[in-house]
Image (tube, rainbow over all chains, first blue to last red; front, side, top):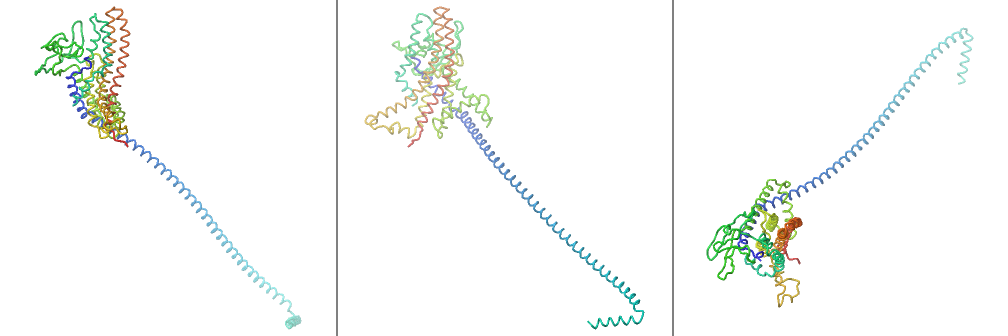
Length: 164
Length: 361
């Protein structure tokens, strides 16, 4: 069977050829290819990991932003609340001050009115007294024209006085 | 040592019994059918799938066009180098040498000894058809893979392109699913270059072997010498990289009853035989698969001529069926080309994996 009777020459040539192919390809083909594949795989891996990290960062950033927003909102609310409180207080105080001022004004006005009134009354009294004295003088002069009448009157007065 | 082992593989020829019978049956039957005819299918088939001293390209009318290759012989202390054209397609004798038609040596250069027996020259390292084909595949592989390596360097960290993207899945497949899976994460890298080389060497040769005309047509992976060399490489690498655990398993396999080792070392004998049968099976599997495919296709084609000799109409009729079957077989061979390259590489990787496996307690 020539089919299973290998030629010695072919074996020799095959061994030489295969060794050459093996070493040439190992050095100039498989090594760079394997290195390139490995590098590429590493870089893909690295990129994926970086993307994951970026995603995580984004999530954290978003969370931070939300927190910040919340804080800002809270702060705004607090400021508004304070402002409202202050406003109310100011209004209250102003009201109080105004009330006091008004009271004071009214008080002093009343006082002045009272004083004026008193002064007016005194003046009226004085005027009335003057008029009364004048009238009494005139009456007295009329009454005490004759002697007899003067004496009667003095007697009367004395009587009243001694009684006291 | 490698060559010695190779010859050890060839000694138990009874191992070939099955294949021999198959081929005998096929060629024998056709011999009977066409004994009287000029066309001998068996001879034609064997001629096509064995090595030759010239590369026959085409026959136009009565004229054969061939690439003549140099014959290099060393015999009786003398070197003889001449072109194979001296044999005139095997019809002539040159310096006492001629191409044998005898069964065992058919297609090889022989001479007659004193008793009229055909004997081979001491050394026949002729640059044959298969050597030329191997050389072409070798150049093809070097060109293809170095250009791919260049494009990897040029387009670093980019997606593959062109030929590179065609080969990359295969390279990755061998690296990840063959080497890494069989040898293990830690040690696979050392073996990847060898595995890639044998995978693509077998694949390229298988594919070129299907092409029926030059530069294809040489049956390289269907040549037992070539598959034998590949198997010897696998054997040498397995043996050299075998660690303590591997040899312990062979000589004193743990977990095996003592009476299988003493007084007759049955298990060690079986294990040591296993060392040789593994590469031997690699050699025969690839050789038999590829040769069988070629034999079947050539058989179908031969049928056309056999029936054509009986009657022209019958020949035309049979040709339709034969060509149909041949096309089917060619597709099957295309599949087989990939499968056998894969199987050879996978089994080699498994043997390397077994040799380097750490003991697990």
